[in-house]
Amino acid sequence: MTPELDPTTDLSFTRTLAVPRQLVWECWTDPKHIPHFFIPAPHKVTAVDIDLRVGGRFNTTFEVEGQTMDNQGVYLEVVPGEKLVFTDTYTEGWKPAAEPFMTAILLLEDAPDGGTTYTAIARHRSPETRKTHEDMGFYDGWGTVVTQLEAYAKGLM
Image (cartoon, rainbow, N blue to C red; front, side):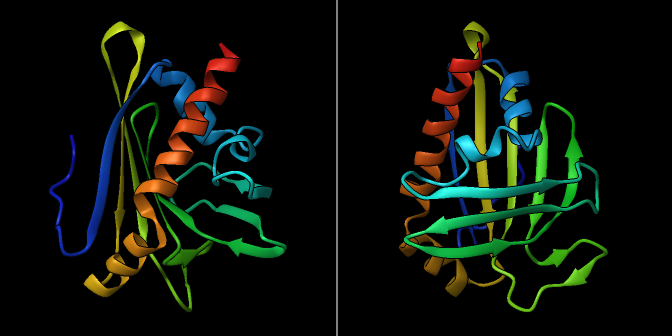
């Protein structure tokens, strides 16, 4: 199910989470859950607006070190319980973004003992953009997010 990766433009990691796949899906698709894990603490998500359908919006607002950051994007693919693909290349209504950064692919599979195999992929338009994202701390940042997600989801069980 994992798409072929291009090491020049893609970043990826896989982790096994000790929470059921359906709960991980719910956390990623219900706006009330996103603020609890989506950005590494101590930064905060201050607003979330989701329209969970292909072409629907996935908009978030962050507070990072006193700065407000708006992120607007759309879903490109939604396979319930299995796959989310979203991008900041477009905003709702397929309006091109001025400075797109990446497309995210989240893959969820059942793992032994009722857990979830969680794969996160970040696709970039150029090797330079990929390198910028890696240098910004892709592995630490996205790793922290999935650690926060797992801890939060465990609290919902």
